[in-house]
Length: 77
Image (tube, rainbow, N blue to C red; front, side, top):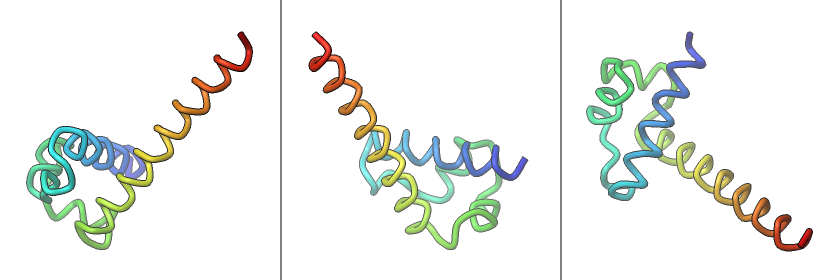
């Protein structure tokens, strides 16, 4: 359950960053989008900045994966 909550929080943060940049990430907004109370975020992340950092890292990893997949498609042609 804790992993699921953490995942939902990260997904909500990633969606907020994608939509409006890091400034769009507020504890209240992310908690509401993830369906939890604002204090729940602090059970999973030290603070807002830690949440943003982890969300950005996951965004980077996803983009890197997409870029790699595209490069693999082009090299196999």
